[in-house]
Amino acid sequence: MKAPIIGDTGLIMDIDHFAVHDGPGIRACVYFKGCPLSCAWCHSPESQSSGVELLYAANRCQGCKACASLCPVGAHQFAAGSHLFNREKCVACGECSKRCPSGALSMSARFVSLDEVVGELEEDMIFYRNSGGGVTLSGGEVLSQAPFAAKVLERLKTSGVHTIVETSGYGRLEDLLKIAAHADMFYYDFKLGNEDEFRLHTGGRADLPLGNLRALRNVTDAITLRVPLVPGITDTLSNVMAAYSLALSLDLRHVHLLPYNASASAKYEWIGKAFPLGELTPEPGAWERLKDAAPEGLEVLIQ
Ligand code: SF4
Ligand code: SF4
Image 1 (spheres, protein in one colour):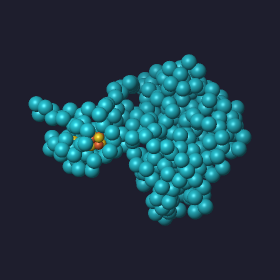
Image 2 (image 1 turned 135 degrees about the vertical axis):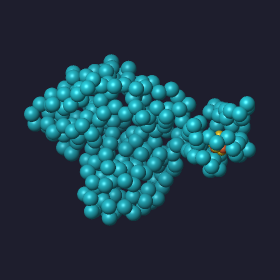
Image 3 (image 1 turned 180 degrees about the horizontal axis):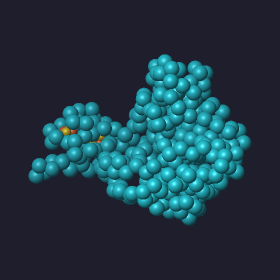
Image 4 (image 1 turned 90 degrees about the vertical axis):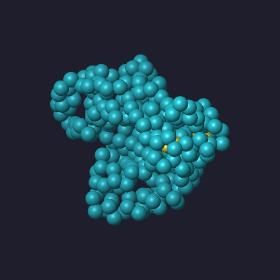
């Protein structure tokens, strides 16, 4: 199911009401659906498509067959004790997920109105205030729903809620600047500095987010660069040093190093894809050494 995302309606995967790794204090984190990149290490592959799809966790299925009786297109079949889900047939109507007793079936996202999402976020106001927290918009890629994101941020700013936008910077500059007008802070990805490697591992162009970052820096200095540490891909000394140099050249003081997370492999199964990378282990102490290699003037955290 695909739907245009304009104005006062957005498509989100979830809201985490107790996020403690996405900025200071206790935060609510809103995960936007849709991303133009396809990073090989992506830990939320279900966020990439801009539509809603059925997620199927085969290991949770109890074989009750309720889904087969509800599906209007016959996407669930049972043969020789096995549950066969035909993803090609599924039109993401969501009927089966409503009645699955085991949680094996769920929808990857839901449409929300501006009032609905802001209302839900404002319910946690007391936690933000008492902890120095706020709201973080994440993804997917927030820029893929920029008009909606900008409106959410504008409303939260009016209510005095501190906001952070986590972004790859991969989108239109005018959208990024529209969002910047209402956001307090950015967590901005630095994935790979090398153009060829960026293209190989993310499917996109390195110069686009880099150019956008320079333009963003002209309007705010509240930017933390974030480098995913993917063993053998992004965690090389030359790549991390390129991130440090970029930060210093833009007079940015904060860099976060984000350790690789292989626990996403199950999510690839839920959308019927194979996990491209699998278990990758860094050399012992490698990431601490990258942190220690930071030039003076930078504050680097391994998150
Ligand atoms: S989401 Fe709808 S179309 Fe897809 S499998 Fe479930 S019932 Fe069938
Ligand atoms: S409704 Fe859920 S538990 Fe029952 S057969 Fe379908 S997927 Fe399995």
